[in-house]
Picture 1: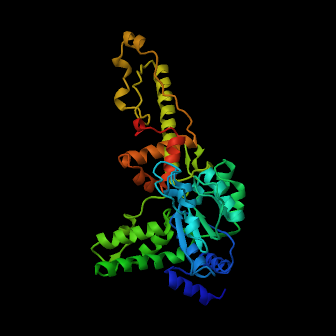
Picture 2 (picture 1 turned 180 degrees about the vertical axis):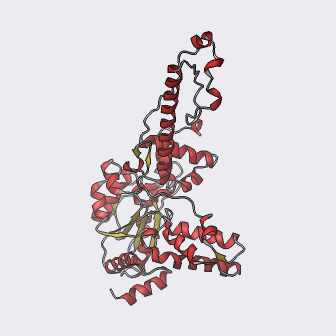
Length: 408
């Protein structure tokens, strides 16, 4: 596909950037568009995966038919089959009339299944049948219907891991992944970051009739070197905040830094207490921070025991206080040997110790979710947004990890 065609696609869909990785992804989308092959778009949350099914539909023979986008992660598990495949009157409580599903509505066109990795296993079986034969049945019906749709799916989950854990069907994965398209993360296209920032800042300036902010050289370098865990979505958020809040229209590195949340690349080796924190598979930077805190607690408990042993060997007495949240030993709990009688020693001979339990990844995820729920006063939608996951994923993990209202 010629470069001019890719440029026209960018102009049509408002795609900013000239990185080789993004151009390759667009080129694959344009080459596969005229076919009816299923496409699986993968990439981190916030990279712009939703543009690719639109491009594929717009440059296909189905462009004059319907394009239906479905967020599978936003539909409750109990109604997802009805939403996708329709239902008959009386098939369940509240089904007061028959209803077409998205596959029936999109007949002849394209259906985009976003967050396809969130589909329940029972729905995956129905979807596999549609992909194999174009056949489906409405909920509550025994009549087989046919549909002719082009399926484009997207996910930010690792479907290979989901297959290994039994949460995603392998046969469905290969049906969806006929043609894979990988959308690069923002940090993989640093040359595009200043262009995107300028575009977002310009949009705010036009909307609110103010001068657009500009970055000095130091701020531009900082912008390009930042990890951008939230990708384009996070960059847009930062550009909008700076445009609205800063009086000066020239942004320095110091000003920009105050708007950037700390993000640690999990590939970086960090050694705490002789342990390589990055040697484990952390699914997010928050888990890394939790691991560091818990390792610190272990080290402090070790120091506490060592101090107790040294004081005993020197004839001192140490009555250990109850440990606080992370195991710090208050300085007021250390008693000088000259101030302690033999009677005191007899009463305080047993030193209380905190047993440190080696935390698993599930333990850290549990702590992470509870912390997010607490900081959002139990609002699960806001907690899911803070954790960069869908509400359905959050609900499932709350159930799997046994989190109750008493924990929040």
